[in-house]
Amino acid sequence: MHHMRLIVLATWICFLVQTVSTQVTLTVNASDTKRPFYEVGLGSNVGIWTHRSYHPASERDPRLVSIAREAGVRIIRFPAGNEADDAWFDRDNSTPWYEGTGSYTRTLRADFLNSVQDFADEIGAELLLVVNAKTDDPQMGADLVQYCNVDNFFNVKYFQIGNEPTLYRDDYEVSPEDFAQRVGRYSDAMKAVDSTIVITAGGAHQPPLIEDWLEPFLQASGTTTNAVTFHYYPLWSGQTSTSHGMYPSIDNLLTFEYEINTSLWHQNGCIRMVNRSLEEFDFGVNHLRDQHSPGAPIGITELSPTAGGGSSADSTFAHAIWAADVIGRVSYYGADFLTQFLLQGNQSYAMIDNDFNIRPVWYAYVMYNRYFGDTMVETVSGDESRITVWASTKESEPGKLYVMVINRDSDDIAATLNINGFEGGQAVARFLSAPSVSSSTGANIDGVEADENAALAEIQGSAVAIAQSSISYTFQGYSVTSLEITDTSSSGDETNAIGVNRSLMPQTSFAVQNQNGMPAAFFRVNQG
Image (cartoon, rainbow, N blue to C red):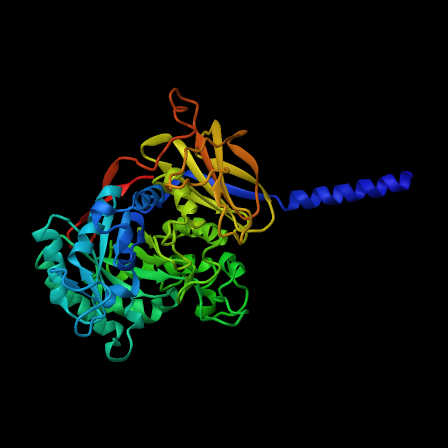
């Protein structure tokens, strides 16, 4: 019997040692400021084809307004996707949107544009207008600027020249150097109408093309390109090899890094490709921008899991987990704006479908809109392959620290969160989860889901103990946790520590200072 007790005791000690050895340390250095959290803005794409939700403005579906506000949409990129490069601009509204004229197959009608601008005004967002560049008609670009900013008072500051020139084919195929010359012609024509606008271009449709396309484009374009953009879809619907990193599976979507296969296209599927494409590679976009267009903002104007039409993984809770990681990651490593693809559509990666059914990814954007600040601070994860931590402060709430923890692993992870440079005395946790990682419905924050009007109630959260600026917490498998930490050492700092609605904060103007001699642009950013 004594021998049996020793065996049980030894087994328990081994289990305890194993448990302690797998404890993860997360660190927040609150006094080490990294960069603004999307200084220009966080937004989404709106398609012409979903016009029934926003056009005419007098009949706009109020659910769309609620969804966009709650998600913190500050930029609307319009028209979305390939249709921008297929459309001509019709001032007279004489052609149905789904038809074209000459070589065009779609129409950007002035009345649709009016309705989108009205929608942007209602939610406090900036309009990013994509101009057809495949057909090479700079005068049409100039006419758009004339219509928006001279004939009307839309004050559109941000114009993207072309959607994905890397995918122009046949008679439209163009080299990066020739496309840079084209962008220059567009810029000259459009700025002759309004010299204050910002021209963004680049449009590589995936990070592996940054070296072969974006670099020679920027070398040729230089300061003509006032903001640098590219797209990121880690998976590809046409990939049939299950061993390839871009095969559209939940496992690939949530994988941090691949240990084998050095091909950039294979690596594109892993989350670390974000770090690499912006910062870690010698040809990362930050470095290219600094060399060729210093001070230009960097934007990812299309972001979703699966290129080529989407996949079954896109509509699942895995998309929400991935988005929560990547939204923070993209900003932390250097992007100034991001427009998710797509706000509404029956495509699997849209936030909502055409019938206004909300997909899980919407809740990830709500988490950042309600429970995150405006300035990112340094964070370190002791096991980034499974768990990620982002943190921020907010200028309007100096006594607050906001921490977002994303567990991409199926297992619960016990962690110690050490906070340096901030005396937190009170913490509140809010928890984004779903029935399973593959669930397409049932995503919720602390059990709360949006109602039939696409409105989300206030979420009180639950208290979490802090001991000497440290929090011990077990993060549930496949989840996103927000920790709102309040410094209670001085009077008044506890006010509104729980349950504050930040979905409709006052607008603030940020100057996007382009140091290449181009005029600065101002974007309305709703700090969330």
